[in-house]
Length: 171
Length: 297
Image 1 (cartoon, rainbow over the protein chains, first blue to last red):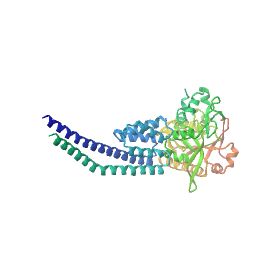
Image 2: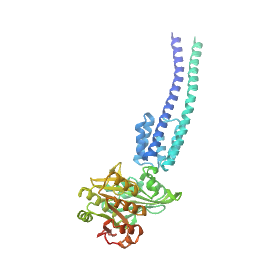
Image 3: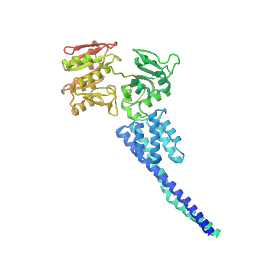
Image 4: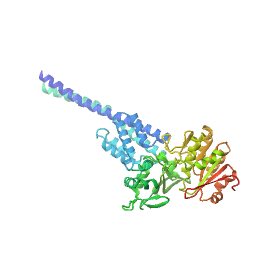
């Protein structure tokens, strides 16, 4: 009986690892998708309404949820407070204030690149730099999705197989 | 502590400059007209037309960092939102204040696209003096006419124009349309005027005069149209067109004297057209002289 329970625990633990990884990938994809939507909105606001950044970040924070919404909200607060010398500095500060698991390293790097020119150009050039960030984030999302199926499936299979192997060995 | 009028201005100043202004005695703050930041030079303040160090005991220097801070804070970290006015060398601030900019012009097809490497900035304080236009209002209330107000820089033309708009609107019950091309007359923020321009006043902000006048004529049917600083032939042309459409005009012009006003081609044409029935001159002591417009040229 104890062996049976142990085997079940090992199998479910191994499968859980695979599922956890799958959840992480799904969450990363959802974050990237939200960031892309936010940048699309950012582009429209700048192109057609010339909305200043503090107000724009507030609008984005309302439109997005979870860590993306919280990040735009934090940036809006930082810009309204006028503590930073430039939008790039504000972006750096806010990214540093977010927990590491909120955004993956490549996503952080893309946000920093976007922040480097944010607010420094006229509307046309600003739109161009947002388009560049959009295409890079889109690329990251594509890679993630392509990876998702193969990686998650192999992780799950590996987990289950490892669990089964352990169970066989134990019996 | 600081004069509440300065609130919109203080928040764009680099922290050491802000602290220096806040440390000024209230009476001195009340006389502050301008702050001047020149790259590599000492930061100065203008009181009663005279420029002197802002902080004589602990001299403050303006560097690239201070000017970058000022530009970012003045534009809300959004150059694109103010590129039209940066191109013309200024950024409007909340409360009607204004940052004038000098730097290296970036040109494209013969026009200025933007300014880079800002080398100096002049932060002008806007103040509202209710009653400053009493005399002009009385003259216009007795005999409605278009009014041209001339004076040297810093003589209070915009302040008087703003009060005249307010009085015509509130006391005279006239519909006044304001083309606030530099955001200094009504200083709208989020669509709400930050300076009192009267309850019958419609404001179109940060719009070129010519287009603003046309929009007001088409959409708002004003009794008066007010514009600040006619400086070029296109502005004068817009005035002439509006004058022919039934609306009376309230406008300001840079000139040190009546003679100079008549000598300059842009104004000469306006005066010759006879659309201005009343001309006002402000001298550097902010004294107003009024005269009828007919037969000026």
